[in-house]
Image (cartoon, rainbow, N blue to C red; front, side, top):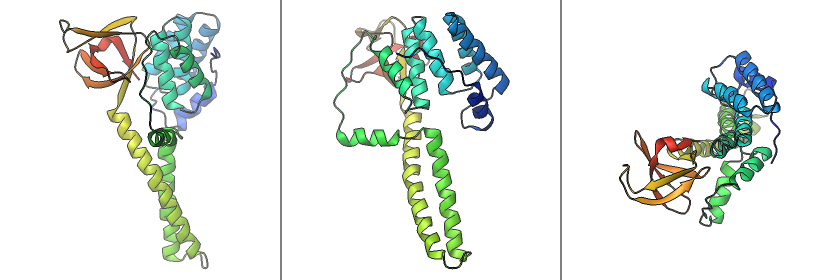
Length: 259
């Protein structure tokens, strides 16, 4: 596991000013909190580091650097559930970051529950890998760019603005539009999954999974800190969860954090 935290405040500032991350905080506030959190981390004061990183997220700034550093601090502070939660958040923002994936796998190895996942078919695994090839924000920008390029190329063809190159403009328009359709379909499906498929991580040491959303419901089984679950139903105080092996039941909402 890599215990290295990330110090790039310049990158965060650029993202705040120009990037697609959901951010309403001032760049100088984020940079100050990140520096302070990193200093606390290097000094071994992990609780203080966690407090600073969480303040950044509470300001509505969402970035893999902050989530990754927060996850490392939680792991060092023996908060396994929160560490896995923020590694998962960081991985969603940067799906191809090798260091995030390695730390997540290292943390998962310490989970008490070993839930076996049913074998995934070749087609579904390749489709999932293809759809996660690009971060969602970048895929959205590229889809829009290809759509604009397709329209611009077709305009050149229609108006014959560049004599002798109208045929090339038509081919370019078809190619750009095909790329737009591919990325657009992938983007729409990923956004749909993101909006409808909710996942969470158990944050308490142990929680009983009940047959219904009431404290007096029979206990079906117990799960432990750090396990990732899927949210099937959401009530004010209860959530219905399911595991990768198909087991499902109800737990108190306060027992988990949403990814």
